[in-house]
Length: 197
Length: 197
Image (tube, rainbow over all chains, first blue to last red; front, side, top):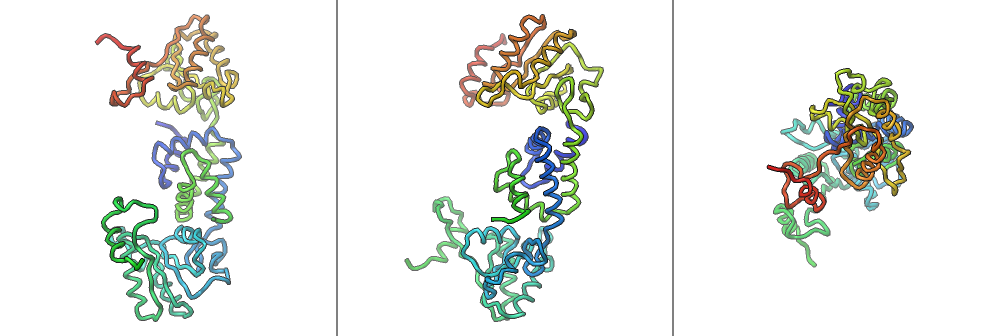
């Protein structure tokens, strides 16, 4: 329906996650009416982000230098290594302000249907980091779904002979939720993991 | 929580309509992981759109030249003038492929609370177009809300002595809807505007 560059803009906005055709159109019309300066700024931030942001050579988190801010922070406890799927998981955990160890970002999870195998993830790098010594506990903090479970199992097996303790985040009822809204898997895990009161 | 340019990107994405803080974060992480070429393309399309798109000097629709594609189209019926609030309304009506007249885009609607008065809209330009002659019917196609109604009433009064017929789009039950879901205003309008079967 739209023509030329306006349609190009709608198409390109529509590739962003969570932006459907209708939202893309709405954003495009916003862009048309917005102040040029603010759109120029967005365009240059997009370009700059791609130019400046890379992945930390140690942990795989996003970084503006060769190493990310967390890997560069000397006060972090190097004995704890928390394994996550994506950089956004690092930010989710950092938001807690409780964990003071280090991270290892895999870049995804094993997903045979999606064509992601162990070799596509930073699992070898994890093994290398662990075998260099200093780490006492590897905390698996992957997504609580089939792919995350498979990946956790794979990593636990890989590290079985390394001498480090491998733990995982607790599964159970989310705080603030209704028990009768919990799915069977979650409720089952909550029972299996019950603790003395 | 995020730092530097990643936070800048999240903030700037969060200004777009329909993009909340969580979606902005999700889009930012998508951008970080996406191919550089596709993000560069989005950035340059944003810049280009702001550089190339302007508003048609005749009707106020978006245009790549001094006049928009519709105003330049000789086959359009110049006797009909459809008045809308925004360029996106032109596209909504064009999608029907039924209307073959011309448009006049006001650039909004009268909204005393929002500080938009008649002088902030292209109402004088509408009067000028009508007084130049050739137009026989002005079709008011404004949003069916308080601001749209107020603006329609204002324009109808403005054009009362111009000799052109002023019409408005029909109000009533939306096709495909449930009668008992219709609000009272809509149902009232549907009754008032009932027709012989």
